[in-house]
Structure formats: structure tokens, C-alpha cells
Image (cartoon, rainbow, N blue to C red; front, side, top):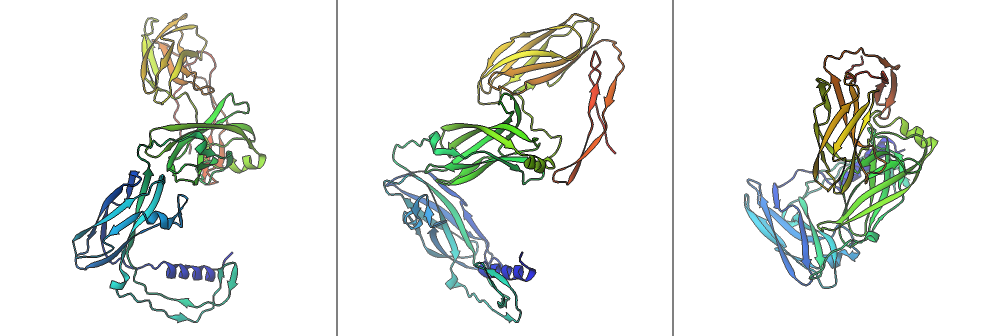
Length: 470
């Protein structure tokens, strides 16, 4: 490890390389970002940029140029891409409160397609400002790591630097042929093998990650989710979405990850990634589903066990929206009022839905759904009539109305709890709590208390619970 004097020396060198000083001018540039979505080969385009001097007293002097962010831009030398552009004027001065228009022109030669990034660089002209750097040597001997070798003596400097203002306006040029339709093929979007690791975010337990490679000459966006399944792949256990949609530049790689709040024990599982890849600005979307086996070793299981928020499950259900969210009635004369449930498909997929009822007590109940089976297009809704007929009208009905989609194989159904209680029925509660347990979680930064609540198995009323732990 570096000692304190080494760190101090490195910090001073950073200050010398990147001087921190008072900003000389208040400068406004419009627009702050430029994207040319359809730059036809062989045609000239002119981009106006307005620069305003917001200073109340000082006249400011600027130089303007186009620069490359790196030596290579989308497989071409930066000098070649920069040569497609011109800027006028290249030097100018602005009086206080005044504005000046810069014209940047772009002309892409024939034969070049893709997204190319450059900067419109606006810098204060150093020849117009009196800059001075004063150095004062201090007789200290300190150590510094430099290129793998340690120099035991290096002079320490104190600096007084007046900084120049330099602002880079990002410019993205999308070059295409006349009439060219940009298409993405699945083989141009590549994901490496999934790996599992403990999450760097202590609020999460584990991360499923892959590396995505953009093999096109255009910017692409990636979004999606990861689903963990049992060893046979017949049951879905947990699901997590990517934290955000990512943009990957041409011929570049980027990490793709899904963070899970709950940890898995040691064992063998399957992971399925469902991703949508799209060239930025294009309509067509390539859907990529990748499935593979995943092994969590004893060591990894131990490592991720103390992370994440215990009790916060990455639950999977059939992705439907239901209204109402609970059915509760006081039944008068043994007759249950007919219900109407609205089922909404918020996804972009078409679903084949089956309705059913799960009874959780010992009553005998017949439930009639109209319709029982139906198709639900993407973004559409359906109203379902539900009628209950009980064999024992003096007994309550407890259970769940379930809606299962054929396309969501292995996922638990979307459900609504049902509580239908005969008028005047009185029941005594029989409830048991297990011992309270306490576990360290979130990287040993939180304590999670838990207890199991057990309701009576037969004929007892559903319970509403609220609790505090002191």
C-alpha cells in the first residue's frame, strides 16, 4: 500500500496536470448536445450553435475546433472523421451579454455508414489571456510510485494556476446511404455466458451478469430481465430487471447485469435472460432469450447469504393487473353477490388466460367464471364474471381467484384473495407464532427480525395482522 506522503505527491501531480482555478467566464452554449440521425452520404449539413457571454463586464475570446474523443472512431482514424467537418469562425470575441453564432458543417463521403462521435470544442484563446504559473520548491523528500518504480526524492510544488474554460459539445453523426434501412440481426448482438457473483450493492444479495457486444456500426440500446429457475427449468424462482436501459456504442462491449435482493442456497439452477436489443432511433427490435445452467457453490452461497434485504423477495407472478385487489363480502341469506373482475394485460405479448378458484378452508364451493378461458391481446383488458355457489351456506368461503397465462409457464398465477363471511358468524381465532429470529443482513449493516404465523387449518377466518417489534 502507498503511504500518506506517496498519496500526497500523486495528488499534487494531478493538480499540475489538471489545474483547478476560478472560471473566467459565464458561458452559455445552445444546443448542449447534437445528434444527426440521418446524414446522407455526399450531402452537406450545417449545424448552428449559439455561444453567449453571460459575463457582465469582461470580453471573452475563443477558439473553436472539432476533435475526436479517441484516436479511433468506429474503426476509422479520428483525423479522417474530423476531416468531414468544418467550423466557421475558428476564432472570435464576444462582448459582455452578447451572443455569437458558430456554424459547423458536416459532409460524409460516399462509402461510410454508421454512428461517429466527435466534439465541437470551444476553448478560451490562451494568447488573449495573461496566464502565469508560479512554482516554489519545498525541501521535502517524499516517495511516489511512477511506472512501477519508486523515486525516493521528488520536489514538491505549490501552484497558482488560472484555468482556461474549455467546453466540448458532443456531436453524433449517423451516416447512411440514400434509401438505406438500418436493420439489426440477432447475430450482431452477442451475450457472453452468465456468471453469478455477490452484489456490490449491499442492499442486494447477488448479481447475474453477462457481457454484451455490439457488432454493428450503429448505437444500440439493451434492456431486459433475468429469471432464475430450478434445476430442471420447470419452476420460476425469482426475477429481476436490468436497473436501466443501456446504450452501447458501435463495435464496443458493455456489462449487462440483474441485481437480486434475495440470495439462493448452494445448488444447481438455470438462468434465463430475456433481452430486447434495438438500434437507437430504429423501430425494429431483436428479442434474445438466453438460457443456461448456473451453479452456486458452497463458498459463494456463504458469501451472498449475509447480503441483500432478507424478506424482500424478487417475486414472480403472471404479469397481469387485476381489479379489485381483494374480494370481501358479508353474505346475507346464503347468497353471494355476483362479482366482476377486470383483467388487464400490460405487456407486449398476447396471453391465453385460464380462470380458477383455490379454496383454503373445508367448505364445498362451486365457482362459475364467464368466460373461464379467454385470449388477451397486448395492452387490452377483459371483464370476467365470477359467481359463487356454496353447499354449506352457514360456512365462510376463503380462497384465491387465480388467473394463469399459458405463456407465463412456471410463474405463479396473478391472484385475488377472497373472504366471504355469512352474516352474524362468530369464530374464535387460533393463531400461533414461531420463535422470533434475528439475522444480520445488507452486509452486516441491518438486522432482520422474523417469525412464522400459523392460522388454524380448517374453517377459521382469514387474519389481518399488524405488529411491531421493540
